[in-house]
Image 1 (tube, each protein chain N blue to C red):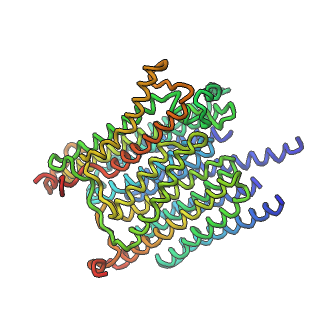
Image 2 (tube, rainbow over the protein chains, first blue to last red):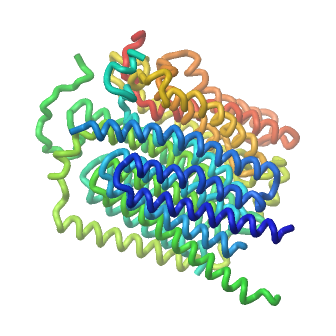
Length: 97
Length: 96
Length: 113
Length: 325
C-alpha cells in the first residue's frame, strides 16, 4: 500500500514540478504579456494542484489533508482574480503610447 | 522519499529565484505582478514540501496565511493607494 | 555545519546588507526598508539561538521564539509610524528628503486651506 | 544501524537544501537594497519575507513563520507599496542625492565588519547551547496549553504581550496625530471606488468569509498548535482592508465610539484579568491554575478583535477626510 502511495507522490510531484517549469519558461520566453499570463496560470493551477495531490498521502491526519486542499482552493480563487487584475493592468499599459 | 521531496523543493526554489530575476527586469507593472504571482505560488508549494520534509505539519497553516495575504498584497499593488480602480475606459463602467 | 549555522551566517549577511542600505540609500522609504532588513536579520539570529536550544521535545527554545513574535509586531508598528511621518512630511513640504538644505518646494501644503 | 551511510547522505542533502534556501533569501535581500526603483525594491522585500518564513519553518519555529508570513511579508508589504506609490513623484530629484564614493566605501567597510562580527559570534556560540525549553516544558501543566510558544506569550511572559498591545495602540495614536487639524476625527484614507460587478468587488465578497474562518481557526488552534491572536488578527485585518479597497465598505471615522471600544477591549480585558491575579492570586497576571486555559482563551478572543482593528487602521493611515464628509 505504501509503495503505491509512494508512486502516487513521485508521479504527482514530478508532474507538478513539470508544470511549474513550463509556466516559468513561458513567463520568460513568450512574446507578449497576455500569453505570458496564460503560461503563468498553468503553474498556479495545475502545478500547485498536482503538488498538493502528491503530498496528500503524507498528510498526518484528515485535518491536515483537508487543509492542504484548502490551500489549493484559496490559491485557485486568489490566482484567478489576480490574473484578471493583471490582465486589466496589461491592457492599461498597452493602451498607453 | 525524503530525498525525492527535498530535490523537488530545491527545484521549486530555483523556479522562485527565476521569478525574482523576472521582477527585476520588469519592465511594466503587469510583468512585475506576474513574477510576484509566480513567487507567491512557488513559495506556497515550497512551504508545503518543506513542511513534509521537515516534519512540521503547521507549515500548511503558514501556506494558507500566505495564500490569503499574497492576494491582498497583489490587490494593494494594483490599487497603489489610489481611490479608483479603472477596470475599463473612463465612463464605460458607469454606462454598464 | 548544520541548519542553525547556515541560517546564522545568512542572518549576519542580512544585517550587513541592511546596515549598508540604511547608510547609503538617500531615500527615506528605502532607509526604512533597509532598517526592516536589519531587524529581520536580528530576529533570525534569535531563531538560530532558539534552534540550538531545542530540547524537551520542542523544535526550539520557545522563549526566544516568543520574543521574536513580539519583536516582529513592534517592528511593524514602528514601520507604520515611520511611513506615516514620511507621508506627512511629503504632504507638508512637497518633497520627501532628509536634507536640511533641500530647495523650497514648489507646491504649498495641500492639506491646509 | 545499517542505515548509517544513507542518513549521512540525506544529512548532506538537507544541508545542500539549507544552503540553497539561504542563497535565495539573500538574493531577495540584496535586491531589496540594490534595486533602482522603489516598487521593485519593495517587491524584493516581500519576496524576502516570504522566503524567511520558509527559514523559520526549517528552524522549527512555525509560530514565528506564521507571524513573518502574515506581518513581516504581507502587511508590511502592503504598507510599503502604498507609501511607495504615494511618494513616486518625489523619486526623480532623489537620484542626485546619492552619497559620494568615500561614504559608500566607508559604509561598505562598516557593514562588512558588523556582518563578520555577527558571523563569528554565530560560529562561536556556546556548546551545548543554553536553553529554557526544559523549564517551559516542566511548567506547561500550569496552563494545560499544548503550544509552548502560546504558553510563553500568554502566561510566562504575559507582561511583554500586554505591553506589545499598548505599543500598537500608541503607534496608532501617533499615526492619527499626524492628521491635519480639520480632518481630526474623520475617516482615514480616500473613499475607494470600484466597479461593483467587477473582479475586485467579486474577490472582496468571496475571499473575506474564507479569510475570517482561517483567521479564527489560527486563533483557536493556538492552544495546542502553532498560531495565535496576532497571526489570526492579521488575516482579519487584511480581509477588512480588502473590503475597503474594493469600495464595498468605507473606513469608519476614527472618532466613532464603537471603533474606540474595539480598540480598547483587548488590552482592557487583559488588564482586568491581570489585576484579578493581583487581587485573588499571587501577582499581577497570575492566573489561577484551574481557570488558566479559559482565561487565556478569553483574553485571546478579545485581543484578536483589537489586533484586527488596530492593524487595519495602522495601514489605512491618518484621517484624510473631514468628519461628516
